[in-house]
Amino acid sequence: MAAKDRNSPVFDEGLAYDLLPPVTRWVVASPVVARYPRCHHANVELRTAYLDQAMDQVMLSLSTTQSSPHMKIRLVLLGGGYDLRLIRTALKYNATTAGAENNTNTTATITRSNVIAETIEVDLPQVIEAKRRLLVERFLKRRPELKHIIDNVQTFPADLNDLDGVHRLLQESILVPSSNDDNLMTVFVLEAVLIYLDEGIPSQLLELLSQAVRTAKGMGALLIADTLPLSDVDASEELARTELKKLGWTLKDWNIKPGRTRHLGWATT
Image (tube, rainbow, N blue to C red; front, side, top):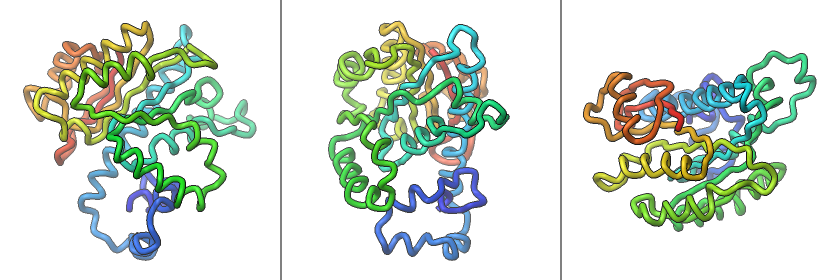
């Protein structure tokens, strides 16, 4: 609903709307959606907006670093379900901006020096298959001009509780040099995923991700809108920084919001 609201920071020009079946599209049509109370969807809006802003910060940090001004992004969405984040992000940062040299817009500035070189989605096999059908049978009929972006999304079936399987996937399929450019920073996105994993798995998964990036001798970032495995669910930034450091991540930003997915932050390897 927030994505359909032109006044929302996560308004997406109707992308999510075009994934919906006809009846649901009517339910969240513009005249109707404005009448809904801002309840659960406002909480989701908060985390979505934060991840968008965090991605901006990651891109800007690369574009302003002399040692990596031409670094490209390998964007990996873990357990994203039916989220269109990969498509939205590729559209945002890979768009050609007319007159970019004279444009001071943040996105235009980022576009000149960094692009999303790879988009990768890891999820349960049944979720990947269901989403693929929705994209092909419904979304592309409404947005045929986005076929090239959807075709470039690599999908890998995996259960994130299976750490051995995730480790093999990272080593053999994801953290490998691009055929076009091996100057890549891998950015993992976790939104409302860790809260559904088995006990003890979230910590091990976060550590596995950081270790895999370092083993591949690459750069990595982690964007979080989830509940991290911290000793205090309302942890201060300093405590979060200390505990994430043990898992191989250096915290760059930290916020807490209401709800099950309380932690908003991003970190680097």
